[in-house]
Length: 125
Image (cartoon, rainbow, N blue to C red; front, side):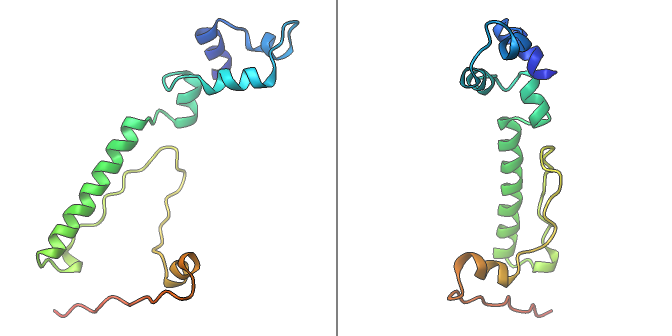
């Protein structure tokens, strides 16, 4: 529905006629037209759930500033247990966030068996 409305609004074309009409367009031409639809079109909003590059960059910036703050605090003597939890901004296009930490086996799977993984030191209270 959104794509049909966008074809009419953006290109003044009837999508049904483009697909099955007497002067139908090639699949390549339809692909190019769909790919060129802007981020403010109904189709783009449907697939991104309204999330755009600006919102993504802002969310990433906020999360990274939270990491920087935690690193600053840790470098200045704040104990690991007292550090603020990481900031995680939920993206509407991601249905489920990963809830588990990476295990040493995950890291070895990426970098190979030759990597040495040191366990974190225990904190002394």
